[in-house]
Amino acid sequence: MGRAYVARGVAHAARRDTELRRSSRISRARLAIFLAAAGLLVWTVAGHADPLRLGGAAALFVIFGVLVFWHARVESRAAWHEALRMATVHALARIERRWNDLPPGDAPAVDLPHHPYALDIDIFGRASLFQWLGPAATPFGGLRLAGWLLAPAAPPEIRARQLAVEELSAKDDWREQLAAHGVLAAGARQREIDAFLAWAEGPPAFGARASRLRILTILLTAAIWLLLGLFLAGVTDAALWLIPLVLGVVLSFALESPIQKTFDRAGTGQQALTRYAALFEHATGAPFEAPPLRQVQARLSAGGAAAPACMQRLNRIIGFAQLRHSAALLHFPIQAFTLWDFHVLFALDAWRRVAGARVRGWLEAMAELDALSALAAARRDNPEWCLPTIDEQPVFAAAALGHPLIAPDRRVSNDVELGPTGTVLLVTGSNMSGKSTLLRAIGLNSVLAQAGGCVCATRLRMPPCDLQTSIRVQDSLELGLSYFMAALARLKGVVDAAERPRYERVLLYLLDEILQGTNSAERGIAVRAVTRHLLDAGAIGAMTTHDLNLAGEEPLRSHARLVHFTETVDEQDAMRFDYRLRDGIATSRNALRLMQMIGIQVSES
Image (cartoon, rainbow, N blue to C red; front, side, top):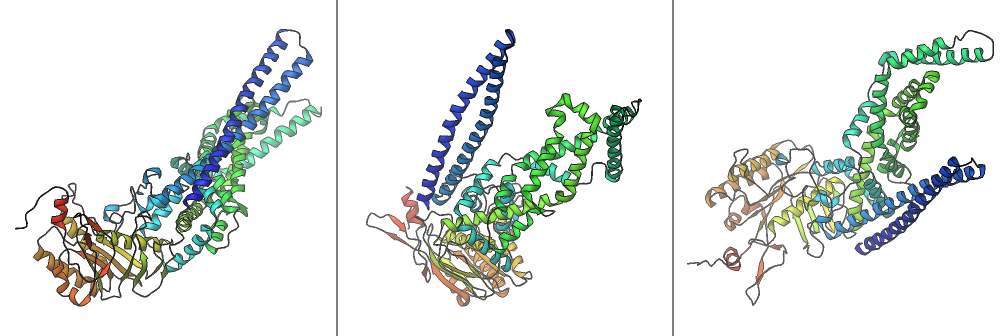
């Protein structure tokens, strides 16, 4: 896939450069035509008004207007091809795990320190799962994807997402264009969209008085034109039409402030939301087959009209509302004779009643499609990965399971099995051999599986799980927690989660070097106690340890499946790790050798 993205990126860059060169030529032509038209007009005005020269100046100004329109189209095409190129840059960076070339994977506003696994297995941050799957096309899509990674879906929802991911993974052009639309829509500000939603979902500008105001406006407008028509036709000599006209002017001045406030609230947010119009059109125009995708398309509508058509109608109404700014000199007479702003206000209110309450749903539907597209890109870029099977058997069984965030040329995969209930996978091995990486690989793949995505394995079968981890424990000066107390708090969270009702879900735990900050005797007692709790609760999982004596003590002696990592030492006394998981307990230690490798001489006597 990497070569394909490089080729697509080169093609998009070439088309962008072609459009930019055309833009430069048009820009120079615009300037020349404008100067020629202005010069000819000045010459005509300064001398005798020659109709031929005046017509020539007018023709040049028309040509200038055409060039302005053409130039805008060319610039738009150049921006589009640059956005497509950026989409390929991000895709290639994901494949090669070039984290500096991907947007940051910042976490949403959630309590990550107390989340059961987010910090331990790198869900957010640099070189994280969220950064690797992104960037999403929209902020809403990013939030939806983050939510999926933080909380597992129910099995029916997982299967539905898998259908959507499988279909979208084959639509390379569609996904690339979605990402490009997202690049172009990046300027939309969340606070402006929030202001628009507050207006769209709120009450009419004048509440219960709106209907009476509408009737009064119609009557005044009709009276102005009817009486003016009678006056111009000579039917009446009195200028009676001035009475409703003056009443309309007075009404306009009296209600100018709330009307303008409504225009501002709708217009400001609409400008931000207009950036999403192309995304709505892109989503509704695709011929989807998977039921989840068709359901998303069905939600992108209101009053029998698709979201793009609703947005186009809103754009026209907002355009009418801009009369006071775009043609200020004409606004007063038009307002006086037609009560223009009131009619625009009523049109906005009608749009709000039909489509306003649907806008948030459009954004949520778009967010779901965006998140599915991110998972589909991972599926397309890793064809050797599989879509997992989720069933009720309490066994996590994977073939060739690897860490999804490690580049393929450095990744080592292993067959892994956790469960059934009443058993635990005990992983031993020397320092740097791969124990913690294995735990993170299990955790990340379980998160991907229950988000509806593919997993870094050739086969994975697992039950619906609630994941709990204790891998990266940190002390806290702010909370006054030592490392040991922080480890105890995290361990208590795992045990408490195991004892809560599971509602047809299995607890999957991953524990790395439990309580390594205390002495071996007390640590052994704690590990045995925790293990009994987890076994009695019907949880499945894995734990690592350097304390090889634990494997010979109950309950691990009867319930643990022993596996280990090891290392080799070549003739030059260099240590090498193959990160291959082997049955049995580890027999090697390497702490002293590692110290010697970095220049610290230690005597074993």
